[in-house]
Length: 71
Image (cartoon, rainbow, N blue to C red; front, side):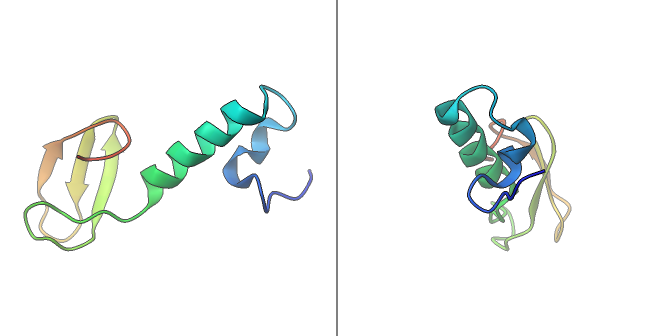
């Protein structure tokens, strides 16, 4: 498998599907994994449990949001 420094997690697709679609997927996956602040305790500890379901690691608050971003 080639190097994935530029393509990141979309390197699993290889040369398939086109550059723009892979770039969009990369942006969504980066936004999904970054730390986000909890609306209850304001500490960065939200984790995505399922599509649209978010849980705070610190205070245990569970709430619904968007699929890839909680707000």
